[in-house]
Length: 52
Image 1 (cartoon, one colour):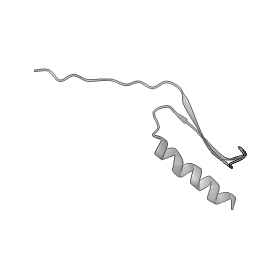
Image 2 (spheres, one colour):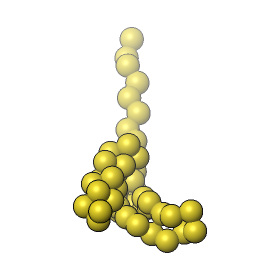
Image 3 (cartoon, helix red, strand yellow):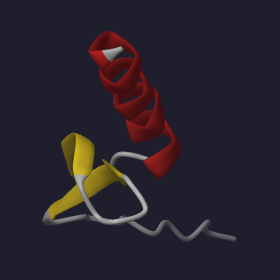
Image 4 (spheres, helix red, strand yellow):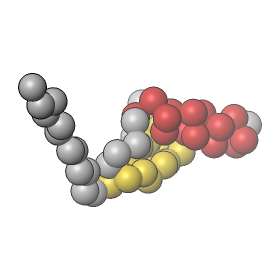
């Protein structure tokens, strides 16, 4: 019995933003599409804490 493999290729980018309720951008992170969203959050938080 042969195991099947699924090769997932991701193309593109994702823009992660931290904004105020009125839409003012406080921090941004541009990642490739294969980066987990949770990994980008730590970078956004470090940008926010550096601003204070």
